[in-house]
Image (tube, rainbow, N blue to C red; front, side):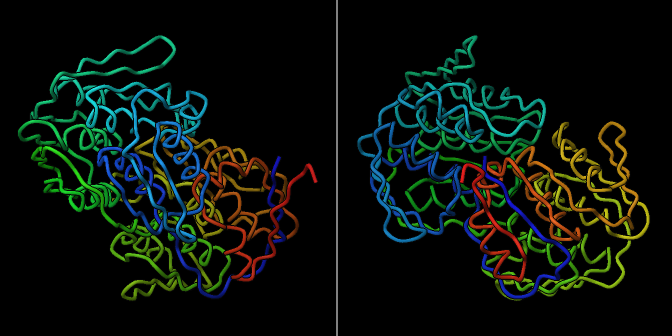
Length: 421
């Protein structure tokens, strides 16, 4: 089992460069299946979810070659449907995009039960609603496998019952070469939805309205390859913003789109943290006295659920009482038990955590219970004096490119070890 060992209590200072956005990379990688051509994708993060996506795509018949550290050549001309290995698909929630991509290109799709972090119920009913509205027959097998097929996908108006990033992505993938116009109402606004639309438009698609409630997709007969760079990771950037604040340091975070970070910056400023925006950077300086606030996670442009656990660490060290309300995933609070073992005072009532701040966090042996919870444990270890050991960090590697190296370059005493050694 891999672990991260942290000797905390040191303010972090310096500059850190953000990698490409995991949440944009996965939809775009699976979208390359639609092109039946060669795509050059740049700014891909070196994370395990991207590697897993490559393994799945290769099993489907795609050829993938690395051109440099972050750039890959992806040839989808040899792709076939129904070849994604179940043992790989079940490891990653993003593998659900296989269905939309295969259905959009081949009119047939089949994939095993997708996995990912356990945040409680993550239904796919809105995905299936979109596929069926486009004219597909969908079969849900008892073992979780999904099969879908259609003689001809035809554009329709699809009104989502709830805002769903995943369903919006899959509806776009399935409809981009459907006959006629598809209109997605109550669509997700997230930056990675916009990035997917921009990529597909660069491949010859006709998509408008991405980033708003209504997305219109006019079907085209075929797509072609393109060269495209993934947007920067707003959640990685937000994690380093909190790292500066929680350790009382000063970090310049580069290769970011400041607009994507506005909700995070607003909450940090509300607490007394200094956030200065540049054209493609933000500089965060921890304050001498931080005070508690109320944070509510919401769909973009609201405060992101993927920053909830990290922000809670900062609320633990701020003065006074804070409240964290989770409006997206019901089981996002699984990290709380780990923080309590470090001395945090947190009580949970339904989807609201009451955090009594001002308590000094204590070094402890903790574990990453999911991706963002793992990042939170690392942040807690950075502020706690003494030796903190974070285990099960495979979760963290799913979404953070070289987090240990980047934190060490900022002055953290942090080591990545393999317990088998």
